[in-house]
Length: 163
Image 1 (tube, rainbow, N blue to C red):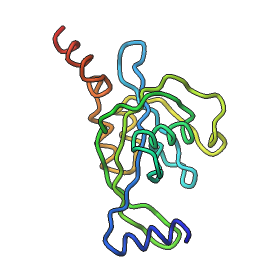
Image 2 (image 1 turned 90 degrees about the vertical axis):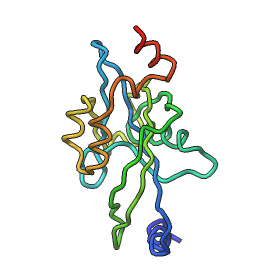
Image 3 (image 1 turned 180 degrees about the vertical axis):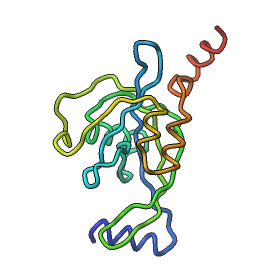
């Protein structure tokens, strides 16, 4: 059964339709947080890399795969999700309400060539600037409220707060 039909059937039965997303990030030379957005393949809107859960993979693992395939970055996904957001996904014949769990991915490598390089553009932006470019209101809010503290493992965040 095609993915769209299966997803429509699940939504019609009241099941939650879930996706997983990556929010690639880095700290710039001034120690400020930057996030990477990519363009969607169809409408060329700015989004974060996201996709369907993957059998046998955790949400964090799936987020890393999406980040590599859609944004051409490698790194480490933080253990705790950054948050979640909902949006209406356009399928072939209808829209379905999707709940997305987003993971911050600390970028350690940007690939010159990657699976979807020909279909997407990527951009590093401050959270405030990224939020302006995102159409999904809940994702825009999630990104706008990110801070350097969110991007640090708990031990580093405690040390930073103590200093």
